[in-house]
Image (cartoon, rainbow, N blue to C red; front, side, top):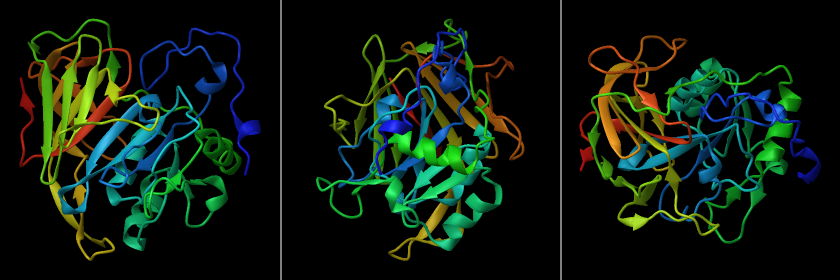
Amino acid sequence: MSSAAATPTPAESTSTTAPLTGLPLTDATNAALPALAVKVDNVAGAWPQAGLNEADIVFDIPVEGGLTRLLALFHSHHPHLVGPIRSARPVDADILHLFGHAIFAFSGGTASDLAPIKDHSNATPIWWDVTPAYFIVRNDHAVPHQVFADTATLYAEGRRRTPSAGPPPPIFHYSPTPTSGGIPATTVTARFPAASALWTWDGRQYLRTQDGRADMLLDGTQVSTENVVILSVAVRGTSARDSHGSVVPLPVVIGSGKAWVARDGVVVQGTWSRPTLSAPMTLRTAGGEDVTLTPGRTWVEILPNTSQPQIH
């Protein structure tokens, strides 16, 4: 289906602050929208990806085999192409709940994967397997990495299904001034059992290296962000199995643990806390001070607590 008519119409300038970036949001139409979450593949065959540099927040999440998969949240910007889109996982429900009533686009997933989404994500699901007309199949990516989408099309269908859904709440605290107690650091690395993410500060933003290579997108740009948040989490097994029979892990994002926040070439260590599903997530120093992010985009590395980030 065509997405041209579904693109949100720009409105007059306002002073609204974007809840997921802390930056001024000048489009009043976007301010009223819910968040759009898209599950993006992150393994060989999926690269190059599309749309990630226009996401407000991206979660890098452990999956089976020691690899990772991404959950990209859009609100401020609406790229014409995002993907490749892959299947949901149980942890998505716990993360999506943070964003109020989001729209959630994905491709595939077992009954065990999808049960938590239906039970407590509060999200409106758009599933390629059921409604392929809202997605794009590209021939330059082999199966199962061929599914992409235009975010305007996803937004139009999500709004049609749930017209009352409102904007997401802020997830983080933003300030142009870094939290005190940080240490200068040029690189931050999150190592998963079978994957790695290296973030390098270039004086303006962090650039991503995935598994030892520059992480380049379809448009020729390198994946970048203004903030890198690393959350140390426990990982449990689930009853879900992937297509190869491997146990689907459940990163535990409700509770508490160590956290590191990289911004402006400085890293602050603290803790994350979220005592219940419905509670907001907090990032605080050992002294109880909120750890602030610089206004801008954020990547969140959900790192198993069997590994520690490397900061240099």
